[in-house]
Length: 359
Image 1: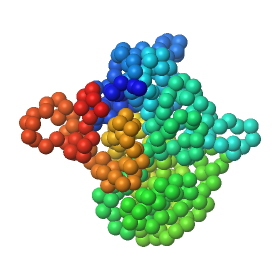
Image 2: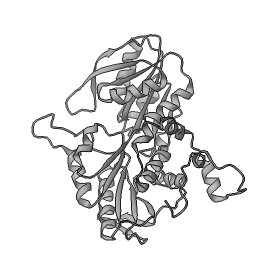
Image 3: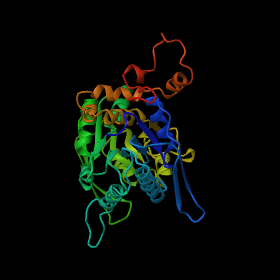
């Protein structure tokens, strides 16, 4: 049995997200050294006693992808050798997710390889978000909890109060987009597309559904180079759509995605902070929502042995309300508790704060 206490650590891939998760839960991030020598070898040292503790390691495998993966694996190994009671790899963005099958002769299934590496390194379970394909969960021989940002993203557009909306997606994301459309009370239109070889470019085939005269919200799991996104925007414009929005869980935004979005007729692009957005890629039309409260809730439930799936079924409205978590208000409360009679921030009112050092 692991100790009745959990610790949250992070690598260098997205430290801001890890700090927000800790702020939401009311705990301090664990202390560790994670850096690269001049010869590009990665060194990790855990600076706390983690023996028999429940450890959550926050490390999306985002840019630089291969360095982030190695940091994750080495940190897992360090915790294993430090006798941690249980190690949960919190991987908000799972790289190589597109390499999930043999769709060409003599190619690898890299998503499976990464899963094997995480397992062999010593992780006891994985917490992730909006995998490119759900089948990736089956690549692991350890428990996997897959969260989704659909409720948070849909809640944002519900609050915008769009009139006559239509949700647009491709076949790969259609199941989760259906839940998005139900939240908006909107019909669903499907984009039929075909990817050209190994290029980051898709050939648009057809728009299936009635979109003319409606306000379109394009939904996907990630935006990489934005080539497909712009193709969809152009197709919708040809179909008579004038007001177009887009949203995705993962804002990869590889070059030249930002330039394409800037030059497009998109009104707004909404992403989450699973991947950090550097200042050079921040545009007025790019909005970032934090998924720290959602991951924080999942961490708390995993530690307590409670249902994570309930966040997306019986407690769906609660999940949508996580979008309104006020980071600054929580920070002020953390730094200066003030009047004990004063109501705490929304996150605490929702029963989401964890007393420091306790479960």
